[in-house]
Image 1: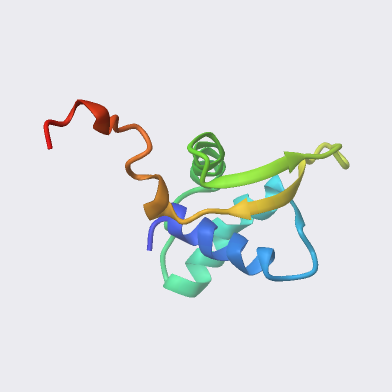
Image 2: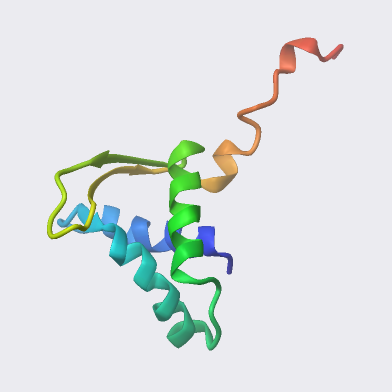
Length: 98
């Protein structure tokens, strides 16, 4: 399990629940939950934050940035895409001869 897969799994569970908001600290806390679930840290809280940012940039996560609450950024989850769906996004197939 990678940090990206762990975040994706947790946000897919959130996507299927009636609650669709979460805080940045919820993403960071996945580091400690991973320690309990997998017996080791998959990454630090900072690693989870950076991966969350990359997933938003890569289009895997679609979220709305809501108003902060007590210095914490709040997000509304719109969509969680599949990691595999975004692997070929940067390839231009028009130059291929076949």
